[in-house]
Image 1 (cartoon, helix red, strand yellow):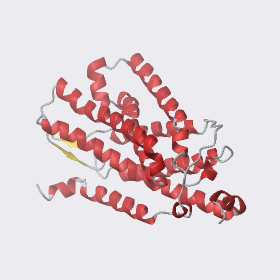
Image 2 (cartoon, rainbow, N blue to C red):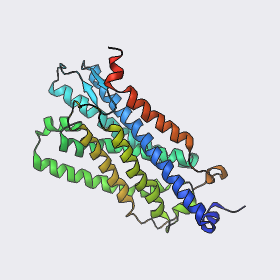
Image 3 (cartoon, rainbow, N blue to C red):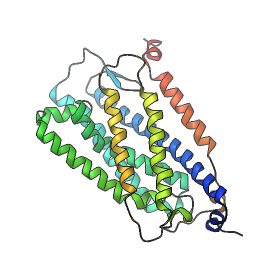
Image 4 (spheres, one colour):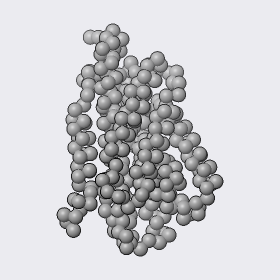
Length: 292
């Protein structure tokens, strides 16, 4: 039987089809992982607020807190920092799990874990940058703790961005381990795979997320869309940094015959579309008003 690598080398059309299929799958995994991360992050934040007696509603683009809520310095720091800290811990745990169990996972599962880990870590690291720029999210806690010093914020953002870039650079090998074929892990093909599985899905997925988050009403937090777009820029820095990594040692991946022949995963496509649709319809003022 012809091996996967030989088939790709001998059939340029098959090679292009596999790249396109991987790009489409990775794009929808990027969006799906973002939605799961965003919902988990917001539910933690909202749950923390409700525990201390501050009522709010989860919308598709923000948490709407009751205007009459009584905030204190302690409650602001607790509510706005709990989500980012747990996101960081969750992201690290996901990537550690993937790294230790990758031999027993399917390629799409590995890609889902990789994107999820990146998103969770970015909600902390990117949250520092977006928070200091917009004053939202983690920025509330930082403002109260540091009293919003411009010079310190600039240094903090520069250090955080550097760590994000270093993390992305070091994660190139991890991302390649999610490849559906050993062919793409070879030295001459790695950048092409990272481009089609990482960079293009990032741009396409970010465009979908921007349209999904674009408000149909005046948000409670004026800069919330800008805040979330900065998060997409910071995760973009992770992906771009991977393209500069030169991995000399080939990565060998054990892949089943079924996985080698995989194309676009339409189940993933429809699950992501349905989740986008449900979030945009249900997590709105109009839906909540039905039960008011």
